[in-house]
Length: 176
Image (cartoon, rainbow, N blue to C red; front, side, top):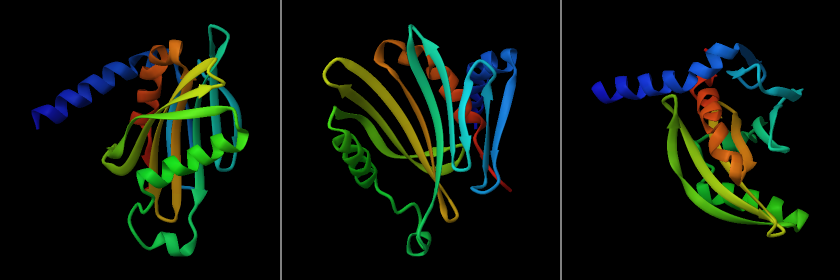
């Protein structure tokens, strides 16, 4: 019990910058979730299953995305059937399609997001061996939908905005 209380306290402290700046709330009724984000983040795209927020740091974009996707009927039957390996294969295939990047897995596995079962992927992406980016993703299943929460930034500014990403994830909730 004490550990849970301590974790909650740490997360609230991390979210304080968001509270001080003001919050916007994003709600996807179609995919059954909502989250809060700081007004400092610019809403670049908000179309149905895709929310993209950005902020510029040292002329490099820092990107948070929430992407939802409906599962086929046969995929809806089980738990979170998508394995970490399958998720990595999807991301790797997309990078190979553009032919410009390579992928290194820093961390992966099953986790929870606000007590919701999820997959976690932390990746390092090298673009033409010139730009090195880090991407952290959490994948949640909600009924017949998958929800991808991702944070992508150039390696030198990644840690600077990681607390914003943690606060957004902390605010993530499924519709009742």
